[in-house]
Image (cartoon, rainbow, N blue to C red):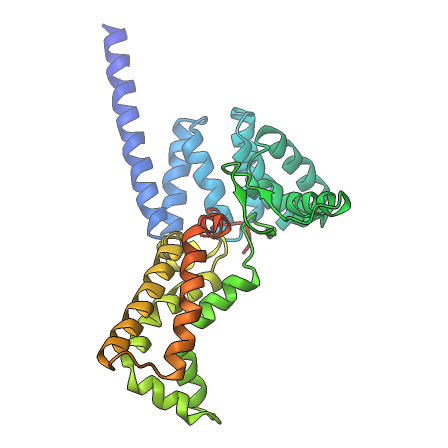
Length: 315
């Protein structure tokens, strides 16, 4: 009889703890971190080895810049499960934020050993050590061997990319000149209006923008991608929820869509004007086509728009 009662009590306790944890997740998702912390602390009081609640307490510490608090809970998580590379990674970040650099390096090296393919861990550790990325090392080796073709192996899918790329301390891919050019070129009409609202020596360009407002409207698409690039940091998710990461994920498709519309509008004007184009439209058409092909075929572009940090690393 006692065994049955104990089983029922344990079942009720588990249900209550599961309910508290789900509420804590909901509070954290809505940035009600104090409520989430209180719920997780209650869970840990009843179940000291509840890993999910312990990890959430550490994450809350990161989000609120309470790095001593975060380090305490990530260390506790490691004490329970020493095989989780993410816990070492997050503990290393906390220690680095506290100025305990040597300890942070030691912990991050353990994390890298447990997850050698994790670009975020390697990137963050390289940032502390001020080491070149693996791609820099590969490039140097190729240059020394006299190979002129610059290709690199992507750490995520082992596919060959068309150009070299560097990563920052968060392990995210940096934009090269070509991508910056595509972004600024695609939102050219917005830029022209912005510049001409102050002062411009090219009133003809401003008049051209007003003549074809459809191009101005589609310039908003790359402008949104550009904004998401400026906020492509780990802490962005706490500021703008997950929308920036989602925009960046589909950024390549958005740019392809933008260039497709651009080409379609130019061809339509070309047809309506009896196969006659002004100088601006002619130049834009000849720029659009190679950009369109590049966006479709470049493996670097595909890797770039999958590169968005997924954890708050810097405050």
